[in-house]
Image (tube, rainbow, N blue to C red):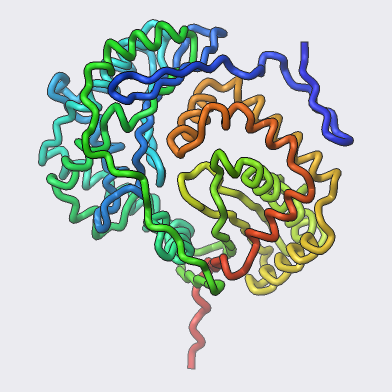
Length: 445
């Protein structure tokens, strides 16, 4: 049995097993929000705990704290002095990890379904009982600084990315890197870390997402047993960040580094985020990104710059929708050898101008809609991806209803919706254009 989606000219057959998941929710008295996504195809469970705190919630001058805890949370607790969290998960046949964004910090384990209680017991333990020793602080500081050195400071593209974000976000903390600035990481002290942990690592600041071979009653009972006794935080501040003023002038960033082998440029625009009230606009922006550059050489930029003009080896576009505050819409072009960044940028602007003048090709809109909806549906077959979809949305202010109707909202987007979104967002005054290239060779006298 198969499902068939029809959009205009294109028919896409999809497996029937990719039906909408069975989702239920509960809330404990201490404020913990729980979500259960049933998936009984295999005796496996994904247990994820999402904290509504990320890099953009850090105190001024203390960048890197949220990411720091991604490391510290695997250290000893008062009940587990051996700091054996990952070893226990592995010994039970599972795997675990963590990640940090501007808006949340998440921890997860994938294990056999009969090990869910153990995962909850350990996760609840480190929510409130972490031992922040000075030795662990210094050990993990060195690890984080090495991570920054390897992933950012040794990569010109990563450094350029930091520079362009700092230029786009003139007032909002999204302009500060998630890993933090080196000089602030070096200065983080024990008192600041302890205060951050005690305030934000609490049940009333967390979303529990459990996906897999479980029942809602089973998950709620385990959650009440292990998370229920934990005390909530009494001093959670509202998530009110400094917002962006109106942007009045386009900005440019020129990042030159002798390590650059392949020059390219990126343009980012300040763009509205997806909220319960703006799902239609977010869907239109998502499809706009696909139309312009999200689908390789089939997109506007790829077809024109890579195939027809043959002046680029790669193009792309993206839209950062799942965020608590307005984020970015981006485009990039990697020119062919012999094409300057300036010429490639001019050619990209011609494509954007033509798109604004001619509007959306209905055939292309049908194609990207079908591809988006296919990704949404196939994503339901990936337990971890499904849990991440729900956790990220709930941690950034969306609701279960918003998640459930998202495919329907995508399917209802019209060409007019896309063009209206493009006209609002693709304004040069809201943009930063960043060049990455090697310095010009010095001319000997």
